[in-house]
Image: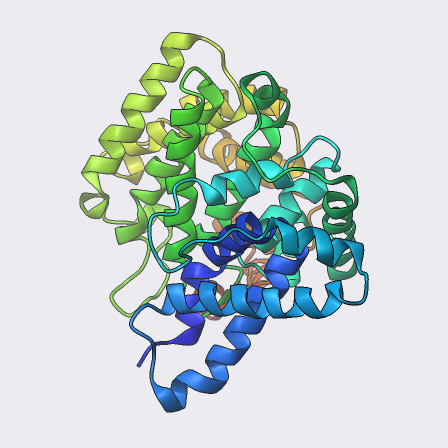
Length: 403
C-alpha cells in the first residue's frame, strides 16, 4: 500500500516543476498537482497504487490542467489560451527530470520579485511546505506569508517571467536568493517544522541534489561550494541525531562514530577549496563552523574559541538575531553560561522555540532550575515537531527546581 502523504512529500516539488514546464503557468501547475493528489487520496485506497505513483500524479495533473484550459479558453480567457498553446506534446511519465526543479528555483528568484517573496514562493512550490511552516521559518505570521506567496505568483503570471535558467550574465543577481532557498529547504528538512519525525529526509536529499546542480552550473562561485559543504557536514550527523525509537539526541551527546565519514570528508574538502579562494561569505563561514565540529573526536574536544571567532566573522557578513543566538551558545562555552545568557537575553526572539531552549539550558547550567523549567516548557509549546517537543518536555520534567 502506497502512503499518499509520503508520495506528496517526495514528489510534490518535482511534479509542480514538470507541470510548470509543460503548462508555462506556475499557479495552474500547482493547482493541477494538488487536484491530482486529491484524486489519489480518493482512488488509491480502493484501486491500489499505480506502478509509478509519481508518473501517475504528473500525468493526471497534466490531463486535468489541459481539460480546464480548454474549458476556460472557450470563454476567451487570454491566460488560458496562452497556457494551452504552451503545452508540450510528449511523454510525461516518470523519468529523468534533468534540472526542472532548478529552473523553477531560478524562475521564483527573478529580481522582479521581492527577496522574501522569492524564497517563500520556492519553499511553497518546490518543498511542498505549508504556509504555516514557511511563516515559522521567516518568523512572521501565517497571514503575512500567505499574502507574499499570492502576490509573487501573480507577479510571475502578469509579468510573463520565463521559466528557465537565466544566462550567465544574469546568474549573479539571482544567486543570493537561490542559495537562501536551498538553505531553507535543507533547514526545513533537517528539523521538520511539524510531524512525528525529527528529520524530513526527502527535503534534505532534494536540497543537497539541487546544491550539487548549482555547483555544476556555477563552479567558480565559492558561496555555492560553501552551502554544499554546510549541507554535507550537517547531513553527516543525521545517523546520530536520533535514537532507534526516534528520540532526539543533542549534539553534545551524539556518538560521533555514527557520523557519516564519507560526507564529513567531502564537506571538509569543499571547505578547504573555499579557503583557497579567499572570498569568504556567510555559507562558507557556517561550513567552516561545521567543519570545526566535525574535527573534534567528542564534544569535550571541540575548539569553541575558533567557533566563536568564526561566529564573529559571520556576524559581520550576515548580522541577525539567529546568528547572534548561535554565537551566544559558543560564547557560553568560552566565557561561561552567565556570559552566554546575558547575550541571549538581549535578543528579541520570543516566537522562536530554539531561543527558549538555549535560554533554558543556560539557566539550568547556572542552577536557576525553576526558570529553566519554565523556559523548557515554553520552548516545547512553540514547536510542532513531536521529537523536539518530547525532548524539551523531558528536560523540563527532569530539571532540578533549585535557584
